[in-house]
Image 1: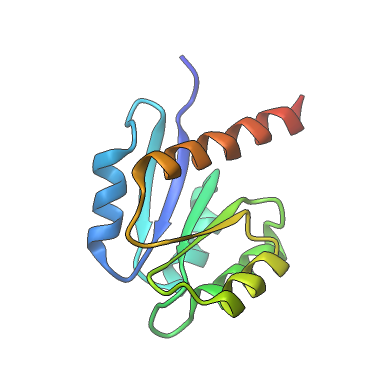
Image 2: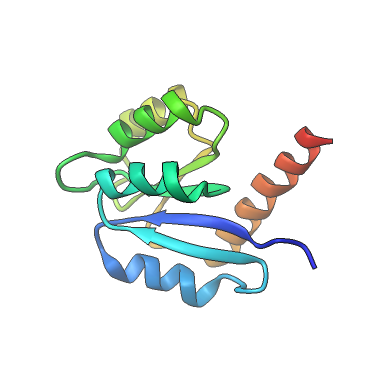
Length: 128
């Protein structure tokens, strides 16, 4: 049996983490969650997730700042930015900071599953 991939879901709305825990295959993925940027940075360092789904609008430290800090010490960690606001300037900034992709709420579950599979397939290709 292959090891489950660890996905860190970051959103200040606890329901978002619950959504991913309920809807992603628990056989394939271990879902951990954080509610703010500081908690996220600690979990990235301690838990070594394989993927981060990161909300842009959060209290204290926004997702762009968290992404910037993640890329300092884990530059190859794929990060998919999530937002309820489709702001083009923010999307551009996220992509310049090497976010893997940028998605908006409400979520299209099949699209997200396909995107996650794409991330992990690309990771496997890079390692071979």
